Length: 385
Ligand SMILES: NC(=O)c1ccc[n+]([C@@H]2O[C@H](COP(=O)([O-])OP(=O)(O)OC[C@H]3O[C@@H](n4cnc5c(N)ncnc54)[C@H](O)[C@@H]3O)[C@@H](O)[C@H]2O)c1
Image (cartoon, rainbow, N blue to C red; front, side, top):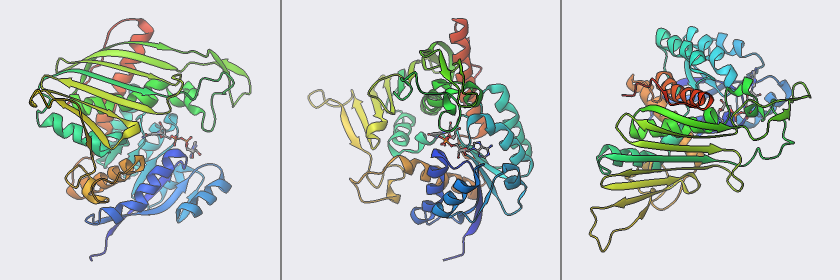
């Protein structure tokens, strides 16, 4: 077998996403042997040296750095992977692009449209490969939904509805800010459920159903004050704890989206349902290998919702894994994203969603927050090809 080219990774941030990405880099060549590149775990970066070293040893990184600037300055790194809280994405990405590195960035691209735009400009100017980890697109059942829609199975689409429900911030005792809890701190996160959870729903929705034209939203912050981990004092909470919006898509369909961290009993209930003139589909992250499908063109006596177990060899990505009928999981969406990134690199093509595409999701998030604040409809300004 010809020797593979190295894709030398510099990972910044080794928390939840740092682990999912690292797992993907380690697995990808085993299951996608046709790739001509091999990710090499060159360096991992975070601030706590002791824990960083333990992580590097456990996961197999060759070296560590406690200053991300040093990672970018190294000439033995090809790609920077940004797995830090949202407030750090822009600075790292812009510096990485200037240094000519490829960039794989976690979502949301940044906290605001204004913060994200120089990131888009920097990667475009430098001409470096870039992608954003909106990984749910790469679950086989979600990719199958895309294939059915693109094949015209649903016909004209009328409705898109999505939920992303969690319940982990209900306690008023939970502090804001700091490790693990930066999501509750607007300075670090940029928003609450809108940028964290709805951004995923919006990315999937626009990928499946085209651009979102305008939005009308309500948000709520149920717990008004929380102790800040940094200051140790009670501070105002300025993230959105919950957000509901409805919208028009450019194709004339209507959308309704809801996200909250106050839906007791739900841990990560991401669902969507799409209704077209001929058929409907629905999907649920808790049962991620299934796509529900209803086709009105079936003979009336046999008509009904069918549950497609998306595990056959001709389903998206599934020829890479086990035998038909056996499931894969959440982590595989990241393996698929890395495989697609490398395939695009080898084909000389952009890897969707690029920074430019992720900026469109950013525009919808911002219009949603503006709409809730001003209690009025907002145009998103989205241009979706
Ligand atoms: N694609 C998804 O489904 C998904 C899921 C979760 C999180 N995310 C995104 O991934 C990013 C990280 O989230 P997470 O859940 O992994 O967070 P986390 O809190 O688990 O990890 C954040 C990491 O960043 C590191 N870090 C913070 N400041 C740093 C600095 N100055 N220099 C170097 N490292 C620093 C921390 O040490 C930690 O390792 C966020 O942008 C988040 O929105 C995406």
